[in-house]
Amino acid sequence: MTFLSSTGLSDEPRFPLLNGELYQVVDYQHITPGNWRGMVQTKLRKLSTGAIIDHRFRSEDRVERAVLDEREMEYLYNDGADYHFMDTENYEQIHFNEEVLGSVVSYLVPNSKIKVEFYEGKPLGVELPATMDLRVVETDPGMPSATVSNVLKPAKLETGLVVQVPHFIQGGELIRVDTAEGKYIERVRN
Image 1: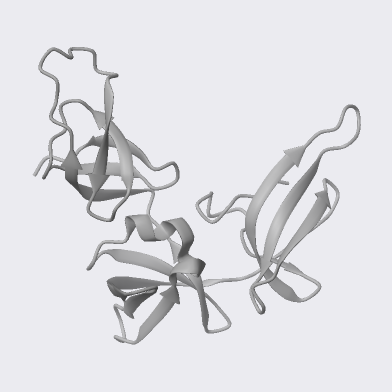
Image 2 (image 1 turned 120 degrees about the vertical axis):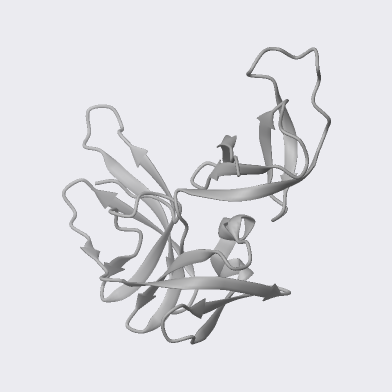
């Protein structure tokens, strides 16, 4: 049994049902104490109240996986702590609080298509694509003498996210970023 956070693999139970209540896996740790059986220590957020609980799952425990509906939505804008999305089929709009979205806000660019997960008609969260293309807005100039390809420097992206990039990346360039790890993958050529 493996549990992953909201940026983990989509085929894992990120939204388990316990005692008929829906929870979101916030954090997990796989523990194998000596010759005992392995277990997973989790922090779960109860979606109805927002309360966080600690729960330990043993390897023989079975978890009911919530069936989620997924809809493609377009991220429109944010106004303070609220982020607004529009359904691309029926043009309905919803919004999420920055606290609910967490680190996802570092990848939201207006007009980008995002998958939004729903449970019983209620929006739960956002599933990012594996990579996003983001523009570099600020970085130090490259060092002409740096010929080693693993020399990295910080670059601030259009969303405010800071990632380490190779020395040849300049401001204004479009780069591809891994959304699971927040790492530079490659330069995007137009």
